[in-house]
Every structure is written in C-alpha cells, then in structure tokens.
Length: 444
Image 1 (cartoon, rainbow, N blue to C red):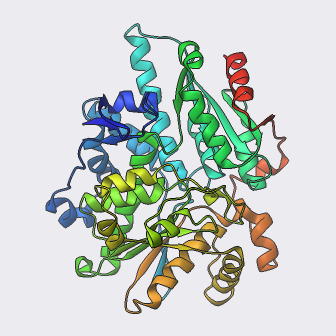
Image 2 (image 1 turned 135 degrees about the vertical axis):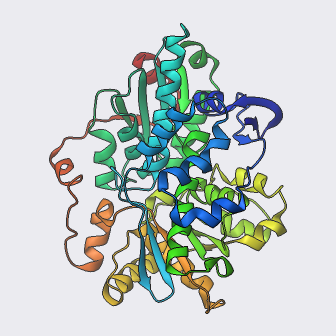
C-alpha cells in the first residue's frame, strides 16, 4: 500500500514514509491509493474473533510490507489493551465508551499505535546505520490529543515531543496530562486558538531551515498512523452490536461522532467503505458549524474557532474533511446520503448532560452529550432507528464543567487523582510562528 498527497496525486510514499513525514512536502495530507474491502468471511466470523485479530486484519493492508507481521501484531495488542464497551443509555441508544485507556480519551488508540510504529521505524533506521538524529514529534491539541500523545510517546527512545495548546481553552485535567510528564515531552502554551496552534505546526513542516536541522513529524490526525487505527473501535462496536441483535446485518446502527478536526468520523467512513455495516453517520458539532453549513449549502467557508464547553471540538477549519471528500470522490450528493451534520449549542449541551444524568442515570462528558443530542435530532425523523453515540472522553476530564451542571462531585479514576497534586510545566508563547521556530531550534 502506498499513499499519495491530496495536493499532488503523483507523489507516492510508503506507510513508513507517510508516518515519518506526517504531511507531504507540498502541504497535502496523505491518503491511501486504494481503500481495502474486507471479505464477507470477516464479517461472518466477527462475533468469535478476538479484538486483536479484528484490529490486525483491519490495519494490515494499510501498513503494507513496512512492518513484519509479528511486530504489527505486537503493536496492535499494546494499542488496544483496554475495554471499548457498548453501554445502553436509552431504549434506542448506546454509548460506545472510548475512555478506558490511560488518558481517558479516544485518542489513546491513535497515539499508542503511532508511537509504537514510529519507535519501530526509528530503531530500524538506526540499526541500518541511517540518520541518528532524534525525531521531533510536533503536535497541536484542542484538548485530548496532547495528553494521549504525551502518554503514548513518553520515554520512547529517540523521540522528542513538542505539544502546542491554546492557553485557557483546555480543561484543567487535560492541561495537567500534557504538562506534567517531563523527560522527552515539552508543552507550549499558545496565546491563541487551536487553529492558531495547528497553523503554526503546518508552517513548521514547510520551513526549509527546520527541515534541514530537525527530523520533524506530526502526531495530529493528519498523520496516517494516528488517523487510520481509529477504525478499530467502529468494528468493535459492530461486534458487540451483532451480539445484542442477532441478525443485525439487516438493521445496522446510526453512528453519531463528536467531530472537531474530523479525523475520527473520517476513520469511521473509511471503515464503512471497507464494508462495515452502518445505517448513517452523524457529524455532531458544537457551535463551530463549518461542516453543518457546508453540507446544507455546498459552500465551504472556514471560520475562526469559537470556544465552547466541548473544547476538543473547537475547530473552525477541520483538516481531515478533505479526506472525507476524497473517500467519496468529491461527490457531495453521495456523501450526503451517508452523512448528516448538526450544530449543538452550549445551552443544549448543558441540558443534555442534566437529562442523561437525571433521567437515564448516565453521565456523559460535554462531547458525548453533543453526540447523543445529535443522534436524537436525527432520530426525530427516523423514530424506529437505533443508534450509537461515541463517548470520547471520561466526564472527569471536564469536571470543572460537568460538576456544576449535576451539582455533585465526579469520582476520580485512579489515573487522574495523582495529577491533581502535580505542577504544570509549560512555556508560554504568542501565536506567532517565529516564536515556535526559535523554540524548536533551541530545543534541539
């Protein structure tokens, strides 16, 4: 399997090269030259398969011959060694809980997979007598990516991580997760928005001075090794769905995905193209409504990101949407047959958290609340349908938002309690690329 740049289809690289580079030299995102289709036998047998075997078969075509089978199986097993339960919430909706990993967020899957792939490629390069410069992983975060990447890459030999996050626009737990590890993890607190952070990262990759002096790559969902393994939990959801509803192939679920930079739902749509049974996808957005407006009008207009309670989705110009268009051959009518998008306000988010907690005894985080309400909006016109919403983070990560809404404390998971006694370590910079460049040149 090779990958091409969405800016220049003649540019072809391997999975290894795409992972190491992060972004194509022409600023394009990498995309697989074909979307593998899983055989009927895979879906016939999915009920009896292990999660490790499901994930291996899903990702194997995308890695090609860049990873030996034993190494890829090890990477997959370490990536998904926690639960992905499908939890009933109402009579017609289930939460796919993706927060049982080390940083309590869905991004643990992509970050763990990528860190292990990159670690292997660095060791392979060094063993072959190649470039011994450490790899610098540069990542922008609107919340959960930073903690997941910090955890996934912590103490990985030959890899340094620099995380940019918007000051005052991530939750206190998210900030502690990405600023307290130390060692090979550095955090830059940017006086600006996530879009500012993301643009600074993109500018760094295009800077010839940095490219000459540093070995840079990205751990945002623009990186194929971060993006593609997110397909796994859609297949895990289907495995559990078929156990709940024998013969479910006749009635696949609607899946509502809290969407910010659109990497997660893009992975779901890739899984759909590979053969995964899905009735319909919903892109559940907050007040940052670039994509809901695009699907309604056919006109794409990026916006400045607006801060909301569901901060990890505060993205005004989602990078991965161009990949979604590529999946559907840039045919908007075909895309709209499978994808609907809704914009949910903060007021609606608060009301949904209260409703689910009080009336259904389920406590979502703000992003999951957006996902649930978008699902219910769609079901208003499809009352006989059943669906899944992705619960992408544990509510304790947003305790400063959720606790005032429910009027009680959220019990602290074991992985969070020690964080509250740690001191954050970050460097404050302006939203100017030159400040990032100066840091990176001194950091090496």
